[in-house]
Image: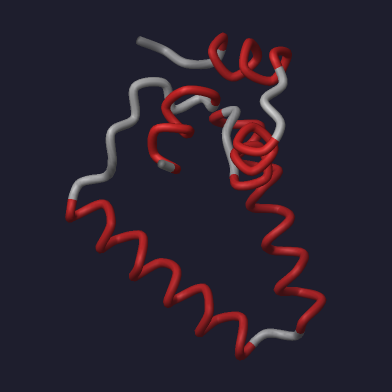
Length: 88
């Protein structure tokens, strides 16, 4: 259900799911992030998370925040902005 919604209203038009390798890499990086967050001060952890969101939003017009917004309340302006940055 979520994948269908992602492919319909976010920058991930036509998304049908990740490969096993991509999913395994996602799990590995997520685990590393949790490990790192346990060792860094909370303010630095939050700052790095915000920086990651800003950089991803700027570089590829896509990030977790935009995906959540588009899943819950699709906004045409955001969809158009994301589509304009997608190179086919």
